[in-house]
Length: 228
Image (cartoon, rainbow, N blue to C red; front, side, top):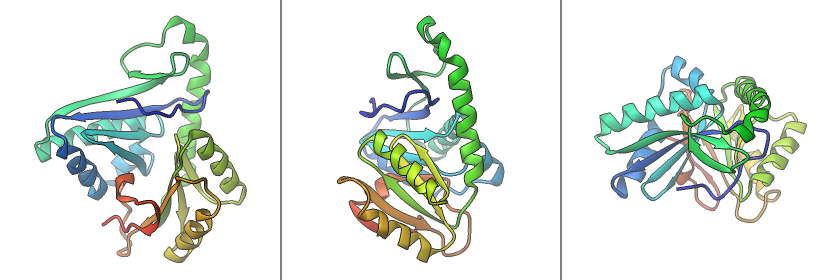
């Protein structure tokens, strides 16, 4: 149930892992999250849009910081109860020296103690990044093959003045209109590595975008995912 990628060192990383009892319920949960509309307070705690990936009966939700992960955990548990989906939900924290995800209740071992301040500062950075990003009616969603690709592309796009949120190898780029989102997405098709997945999502009814970005809805190549 471990993701094959490692996050960049020096960044505090959190995710929620869901192990459902039945294979088909992975798709059920990820789709339910994709269509879920949250109130303003819940969206604020999440830090805006968060990334959802699925591997069979396992669903992973990548959060921006600890508070974001805790809110995602709460939302998922409530949704599973409403949908009558059985399974286990764990809040996970990346241990950078051991280079593996572990239960968030496990303290960092002694050999990682010296990194505590660095990780605290990185968590603050993740929270500030989510706050600066704000809310956009359209988003370009990018899934890249490797973490290093995500870091390099995020820096490039920020250098162009675009609003970007990055976590692991996933990027969200805010856009003020559908035309602008399409323009960015089509341009990035020729600038991203082979194997990247690019799509756009938006809400033509001018409602807030769903907070959970379901990457399972994206197919190889460029498409429009209205998220409705």
